[in-house]
View 1 (tube, rainbow over the protein chains, first blue to last red):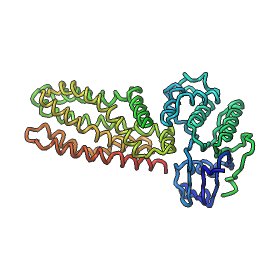
View 2: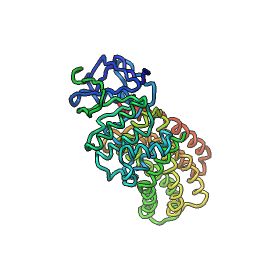
View 3: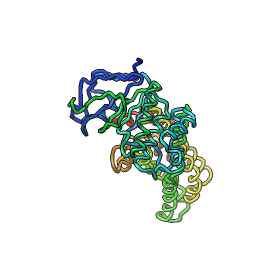
View 4: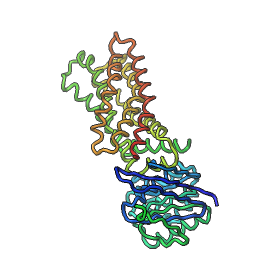
Length: 194
Length: 215
């Protein structure tokens, strides 16, 4: 078991509020951990902390591999056709177009390749963000509410993509207020920490 | 490196594609057009005062696009995605400054010709103006991206941004307009030194501001 991500006794303060402290977790290859809990419990903050976007007030965060992140913003240029918006991130991640093709097939977005991002629905945008994550080839996935706005078919595809990623040796940290039906899923109840 | 080039082209495409770029240039030309109406068509007076007016107009035009430089990227999550990929904020800032210097500077240099004609500037003065503004453009782009990064968290940030940038740009205004004076021989060197200083500080200051946006 190779460790990909390790959080050691981290604490997070937002504003003047202590969200959590002394939180430790380890993600190894093939692992998936579900962060559950009510709104405001610190799920998103923990994801951002793991991504390096927030500094931990205490403790250490170690990332051994590249990271792919989904949060509430899709980071796709609204004025561009979907495919070109995704190609930008493929160039930034230095992966070739085939990786984007395969990921678009996985999330069933190929028919929407020429549609401007601004015309996509919330669920379609989440699927597009998922394509960016899959195509990046990063071993660590940090997914903050990835299924928001997704219909049942899209959620099934998301679950399948996560399963495939884990079988390929990737790890997933998932923040969601409902279980997605992912098999063999570890849980961390953020509500119990507060 | 390919990633940085992709980032650079994206900024340039967004600057030129949206049409937002032409606003500062149009503004620049508008000031040059309005000035003769205000002071009258007296050619010697226009020639004397017009050069300084070109500098003021160029400075104000550089401040106009501040609210589209950083804030849309922050709101769309693009800056977060770049940070997750390990890009240093200073590097992102440097790319943004380069893209803005080219995206805004090139059309400004072109608009300088009709503006000079409207303000009755003769050939040697146009040459001085073009040299001076070309020297100042990297520094103006640095200041614009810096204030855009500093104000990206505030609504109506561009107005505050203008107040932030204007005092820092005053030395360039003095030396740039000073170049036009026959006695101002050393002004070009002072202008170049000021511009260099601001251009070097820009990416680090703007990078720190980008980092601050995440806290």
